[in-house]
Image 1 (cartoon, rainbow, N blue to C red):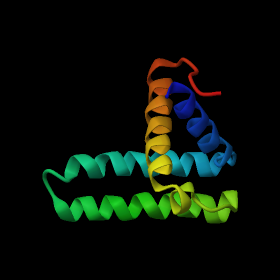
Image 2 (cartoon, helix red, strand yellow):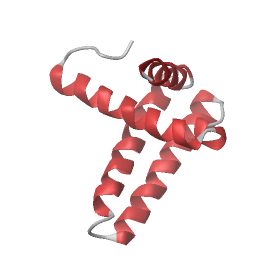
Image 3 (cartoon, helix red, strand yellow):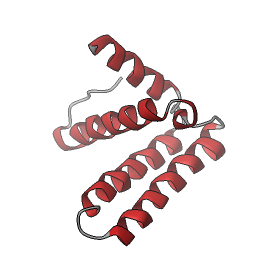
Length: 101
């Protein structure tokens, strides 16, 4: 199972080589994370944050990376690998230690 997660995260990183796409995806998944939290408090905010998430992610893919999001073909993998990448990057920012290659 760990090898599968490592492979999915590696595939996710390979589809996000452009620096602007990486930045857009970081904020896209920040908004997605906040959307999950706001789901318990404010449904309109959840919808707005979800729209922001997809807008940023798709702009990153279609304009900067020039590829299709993995979520089109593999929605679950794109979802969990994106969140895993987001949390690992957040850990890197907070701790100052490199986790992702």
